[in-house]
Length: 423
Image (cartoon, rainbow, N blue to C red; front, side, top):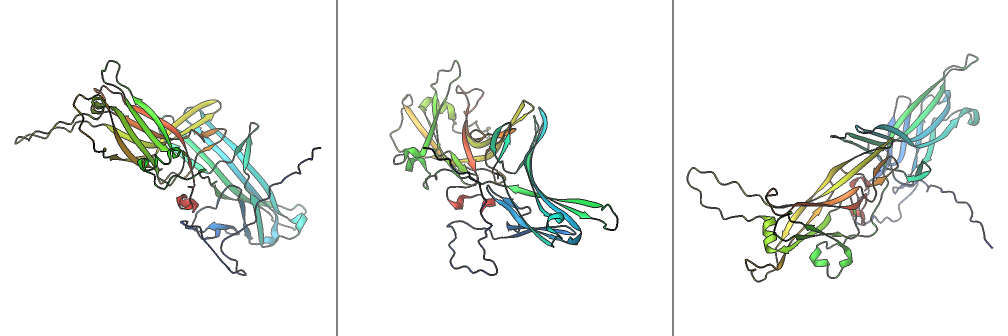
């Protein structure tokens, strides 16, 4: 016997603020450790005859900000409310894409409307009208359901030129009756648009080890690290042996925008190959009077950085750009004390570096994926390591670059790792 499951309708949680109301007292309050909670209050947008107050907002912010499953709530203060016939509210979201390669497109993803007041149903309009409108969690496009993307705006110069804007707007429309002395009343309709920021929060599934150095944690927690092995190949007719590059990052592979991402690099190979990679720096001869010092010889370059790929598809035509969103810092690790290697020794030796990389401070949006614009959730953000041998034009070893997909999120596992805009 089967029983039908009752229908479920999502109901937004009630409006709540951590600060007590005038008729309330705080009995006990325990803030989250390591987190600086912003003091929430009212954010006001004012015109000559209309005032819109948004509740539970950071008063220092220029625009009201909401997260996933949030409710846009507040009050509308009105002057000369006796002449108002209707008040309506509309929450609108749009995607604006433009590319020099494939044209432009505008797509509406949110269109929520409600009537707050109608004189024909409720009588004379009061001077203060409350409102509450829930942010939708998803939207539909071509019969597919997508999560609502965050507010986002970027202009990427170059070829191709990309302009991407994801914006949300709350519009208050007020209709007033101009005159009641004639048979046909004249009405005036005015709309007050308000820019709204939608910032859904995400966090990794598990934390990074507090002691994030590879050598100190690899033996007792090997599962906490993910290793990539990429060879540094020799040129076609070179006689040197290849070098193995081991690049290691935390295995969670999901990182907060404002936290350091630790990494470890190890190069393994014959001593001669490593010398060719680094370049042999000869001892400098004493300078003769009147002579300039010799130009410093080329050295190998090791670089680790974060990149974000922006992919746009307009009318079936594709365009993409990759931008740098963070630069890493490397530190050489002193080798373990051992016997000196013979000049002609072909046994493998290893050299190590460690370091951290984090996003630039102006990167505030995590990865997201929508139908027309794709900052791929699984492939949009990359950690890239690039190794260039000394004297790259004449070196017997080739330069390499490897990109590994990661995911960037707004919050860390602990609250102290949250992005400043989410605290």
